[in-house]
Length: 384
Image 1 (cartoon, rainbow, N blue to C red):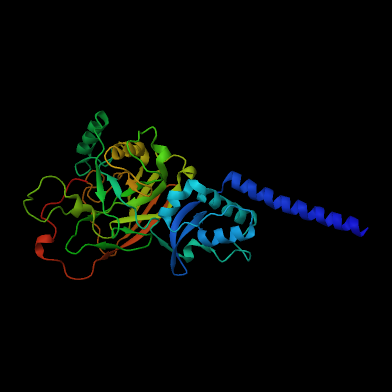
Image 2: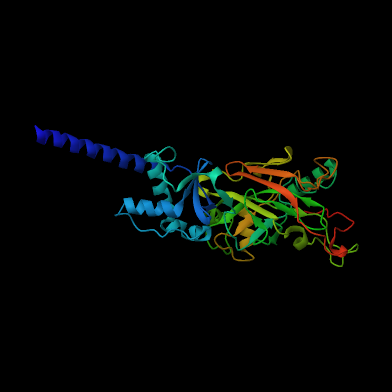
């Protein structure tokens, strides 16, 4: 009788164990979608896995726990940072993330009393820029039909957009500084001293996953790691001289001030992003909608941008291509009759469908303005 009871208990344990394994494998196969970010966790920066836009898993601690509980599992070195994760994503890291996520989901450990210490609410940790810092950011200028010529009247803007539809021309890309310019969700955007014509641009940013040189548009998707948001903040004040000695736009002064590249809040790996060329983009200032568009309005899609940029220089894993701004920037006169510039105290909220939301307050860079020659020029820059 005792033997039969033990047999039944053993069978029950085997069934329960099999059920757990089956549940974990099923979760891994279905693939609970996740996002990836960098967070300040107990005072240290760490790579985190984001679930359901509300839960963060400290990947290094979760990986240690997983390997302790699964002695036969392959050993995977935890990524040191997001660059390391991107570089090794297809060499074991992706699979380990999926295993960790599947195990926590199957065991119902994302909340409640059984939640491990390495699982936190996103609201309880500080979100840092997802990549600290990209090697380079290539930003597309005037790459939306609605943004082309929007400093003109509605009629002039339509004429410019129609001309671009007939002849798209080549993409126009410029380099933007990263360290110093990149900030994370919630960080303040600083108004540069003596510069008063600061503008916003909510952009879909592509994060490269592989080294790319002379990559065709048809091949480009294979080189993408994922997607994030970049706010391409812009100083429209132009060059300081009343009569500039150099022709064209000054992209350095226009784009590379400190805090002028808010990025994040995290990265969506491409396997969890259905169609980047048909997503909504929205930006508000103090609750007022300024930009509300879709990526379908791009002149050159993200694959064209990769083809073009990789024909000029080599793209490396974690490099970023910011794909351009929709209509509705502060300098627009086609969307609204008067141009609007940011001022200290303003609040910017920018969202892209399927990625997340960036929220930033605008503050004055404290201290006196530099000597007068570096203040805003009398004429407003009218190009992107």
